[in-house]
Image (tube, rainbow, N blue to C red; front, top):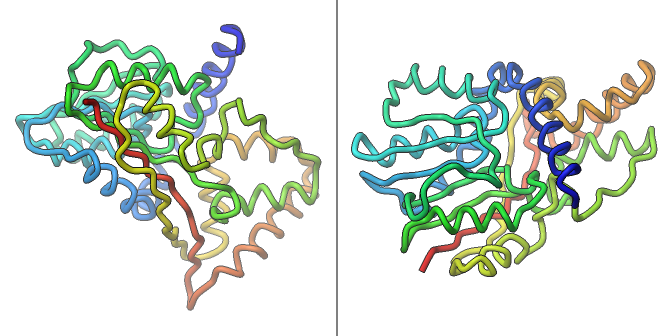
Length: 284
């Protein structure tokens, strides 16, 4: 991948995620309710304790960084980084509301981390790494930043067929317009979905593999309309595809998405499965 391509990808992602930052703030409680089990898993697998120094890569609007700040206490320090400065503004407001004085946020590219080597007890990341144009370079940076004995913990999406939460809209769109299969070498939701993908990279960068586990969970919604509205608001890549549709096609897609979501209704709520790959590695 040429440097020009990399720069274009990074800038496009920056613009996309800045654009949807207000929606992430709007749906904050719903998102964190649905993703709490992933946040706590990452914090636990990182073995965080009082006084630790932690880096959260791709922290977005603040999680799991804010949870890490609680874990490390007043003697510890958490740094959250993200490409999208607008996302970080939301994170800063949340930190202020929570009274979290031991956390700071920086706008930064995950493949060029401006921090000292051997300075972090843990590096964590939730649903970020699969979007990076150069994953091995980013993991090499992570390994360099970790102290000896420090942990790297990451959550990435497992395969599309196990993630109706994410895949229902894509399947609906494929019935309406031609969508090419994603290039496995390009950033995308399921780029690190296979067992051993991310862990293998971590091991090649000198880390010791600990865990590569698929964790199954559910996202809950009050209605199919809430599911559709929240996803359409927050999912920058999905918005780009919807923009290619004519108004009648958009209506058709919305009807198909809600019709499929109805299959996951239990009682008066909707529970859509998700599958997350949790990867843990340690610096010798």
